[in-house]
Amino acid sequence: MKKYFFTSESVTEGHPDKLCDYISDSILDACLEQDENSRVAVETFASAGKITIAGQIMAKAQIDVDAIARNAIKEIGYDNEKTDMDYRTCEIDINLTTQSPDIAMGVNVGGAGDQGIMFGYACNETKNYMPFALEMAHRLAKRLTQVRKTKEIPYLRPDGKTQVTVEYEENIPKRIETILISNQHLEQINLEQMKKEIIEKVIYRVIPLEYIDENTKIYINPTGRFVIGGPLGDTGLTGRKIIVDTYGGYSRNGGGAFSGKDASKVDRSAAYMLRHIAKNVVVNHWAEKCEIQLSYAIGMEEPLSIYVDTFGTSTIAEEKIVELIKEKFDLTPNGIIEYLGLKAPIYKQTTNYGHFGRENLSWEKVIKL
Image (cartoon, rainbow, N blue to C red; front, side):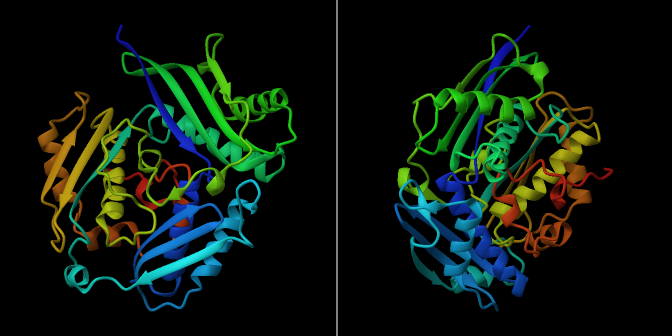
């Protein structure tokens, strides 16, 4: 039997890159709450004691960017400048301009806000049609945040990462080979106690125990110490966790980040649409796994190309799937925005634990093809 190992990672919402994603999407949502036609492209950079926010906004909205950023930092739980960052005392530098008229000229008539390639993916490895290793890594990261915020494990701090290695046989996940967790913590803790509590209150609460056996390796804070974290320990930047945001390396990636961008940017909206289509190809039993690619030119409405790969698992020809996609779905930027309701302020909730596989989001809805 063909046997192999595959690894995916996730991060907690206090990871410096995710802190930046959360600030950028909080600004986007604030604009959309007042003007659904807002054009937003905001990048955030986090460093020791400082947040830098730059980009372009064109909206009929009056927002307090400084207050939005500080509230986002507070929501994540950063309140200690000695170990990571304090939302009350950090410096916030803002450099925002309006959207270039050269870009707006094409977007105003319904064209794509940029050129680029986007991918969508789905498989039948989990109930939410996401890859198994990534889903397990997301569950661990989310649970770490839960036990920190509820003080079930009170000495944890916001910054953290998870990683899961899965053993496959004939492309089916059979067992978990390795679980790796690194989480920031207060200085006065016993590492052995921390390991015990994370195993009992995090790992065993969210990982199906049938995938853990006597040979599964569990590593927790392998360096032995993780007190300095967040932007004090490492810089953060919007859009630097695109593999965590998408499919954990199981699928190809177009390279465009999501956070801080309104839906006229096909980097985001088309990627959401392709996840929707790929998921429903699998749900409707046209294939066991499916990857779809679109390409766009800036200012043009229709995609330049559509590509489908079912990895030899399809029940109908891939060429036929392409034809059916073209018949059923409007893949212009405006068509996607209307179909998925992407003018609503829904983006802050997507920032952490992946943009896909969460049933409350419009692109995850199941339809009959």
